[in-house]
Image (tube, rainbow, N blue to C red; front, side, top):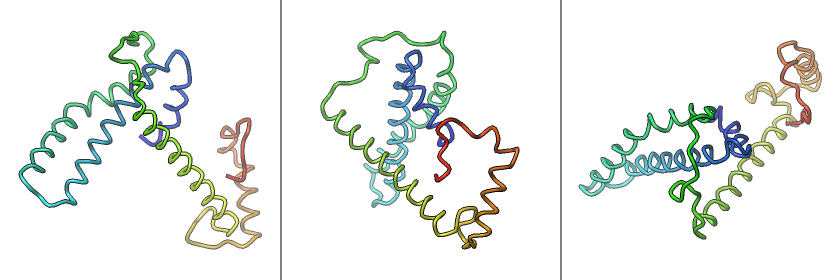
Length: 164
């Protein structure tokens, strides 16, 4: 899922795909929350209530696993788009908005921390392999090799940030 996460975020901003993509994101979020809650049950003391709750979560996961991934594959299919109905509209509940804004902020912070780590690794000379510290000459050779590699030619794009 992490491979297509950025593409899904981009699709959510495109008008033609916005509603189905947002619906998929919400459904996937519920699915992941159930998955996480199920795993957190294993850390707690096992009781009959916990077993019943775990079984309900397993049933949910069993029922929705195929649906979630089929929905992911159907996102590009314009013909199968659903119409806007009150049931599938996004909730305007204040708590939901606050929760989403907190998670968006956390996601941005996680992204910023990841970028910061990558920059720090490059400055420390640990870019290609984080286990080994490279000399300045090795770093320069590596960057030149990567920049002139024909395999990387198609990876360049407008706004390319070589420091990341």
